Image (cartoon, rainbow, N blue to C red):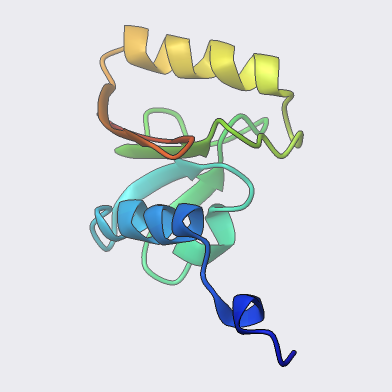
Length: 103
């Protein structure tokens, strides 16, 4: 607790916050499991890849560097990202292992 590094925000986390800030309030979002809780207060969010998730969200935000493994594997996540792009979602950002897509 007395080490300064304990209170340092990793640059990757700062990138995640900056990308989430690009998603407008009230948007529909499909998000990686780690992102979803941070977006619930201002967007309509579902977990990316979860059965029954909202079809055609306006935004998709995913951690591709460290896939959580629930509800889908990293391989399944990659397939779903490719399918999302094939259905017209464009990459807005691809930074520090995070991908932000917009319909």
